[in-house]
Length: 168
Image 1: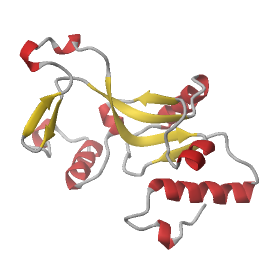
Image 2: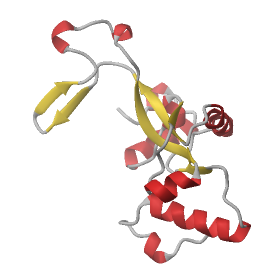
Image 3: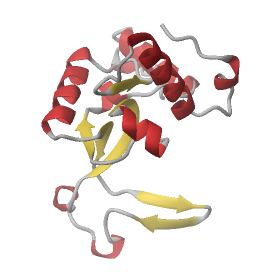
C-alpha cells in the first residue's frame, strides 16, 4: 500500500501527480517498473473484474501505450455554449435515422485507465502514445459524482422496481 502525502491529497492535486507518486514508491519498493499501470477510479462501482481482464488483454494485443474505458454515445447529440446550440452528430436540417449516423462517438467514462509508466512520466498524462479504447455499457460505466448518481446506484443495488424509480 502506498500512502499519499497530504500535499498530493488536496482538491488542487491532479490524479496524475498522485499516480506518479504511487508509481515511484512502488518502483522504489520493487526495484522494477511494471509493464502497465491500472488506474481504477473509485467513482465507478459497477465495473467488473472480467472487464478489467479483457481490457488488459486488449491493451497488450493492440500493442497500445494507453487505454481508456468509454461508453458509446448513440443518438442526436448537441453541444450547448451558453444559449447557443449546435448539432454535433448530425445536420438537424437533414435528419436521418439514428441507426444511419456515421461513425461511433465514445464518451470517456473514467471507470479505468491502463498505461505504460513512460506515458505518465514523460507526458504527465494517463493517456498518450498509441491509445486504445475499451467499450463498456451504461450500467458498468455509471459514475457516482453527485447525490443523484448515488441515489441511482442505490436504487440499482436494491433491485428497485420501476414504480419506485428515483429519477421521477
